Image (cartoon, one colour):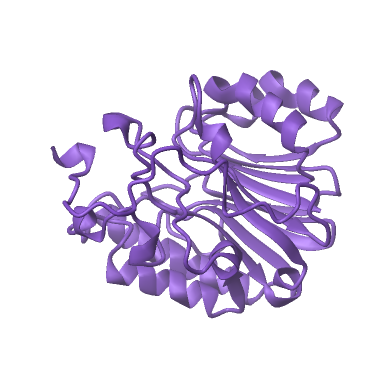
Length: 288
């Protein structure tokens, strides 16, 4: 079974690329984030196309902002939207949908960004993650918790730690919240499979960050023990970030039991202009 997660940053804008990608990679389950469409609009736009490809669909959307989806060819049971006990900002936001697909409880998540450390939105992010941890800890043995987590787990998951000082995504409380989620029995399967590799899933649109491979790994696949043991390949589809009109995120893919493309590496294709040996600090585009 192939499971993928992808922050598409507007499914309407990404529709031709998404459909082509589904045909190329043939995932069995797809978790989407930042769909930015109400459920009826999503269905009108993509329902027929997805049904024709064999996907059942679970949605939790909003007009213009947020929005998550689960697409499955292997069943879609016990659909739950939202995270029980999670706060809103101030109202509930469309950031989580879960269902059982092929016997695995799968969560598609768009974790709050946090915006600025110690802001109201940052406090909301930490409280939201705590509620998520409680839901996952009470869940079944076989789970995948995935999506845009808006946290880089370690300094190895950003191109230059010095560039992110004072920013969200890398602060100790956020990383501690992620560690508490992992402590429920989850494994960061991409990092586990590639412990020393330079791996990113997000690159800012500005300042040529993608072409210089100046990114972050904030899109995660977290799997419980029985699922992690089945992983045969775990990788980031960098090709989907290339070309015209991409999302600023790339899909993350895991193959369970069988790897159709083989154990092909952590990032496919690898960056053409890696900057891993940089000595000087690069400022983030928003700080220039």
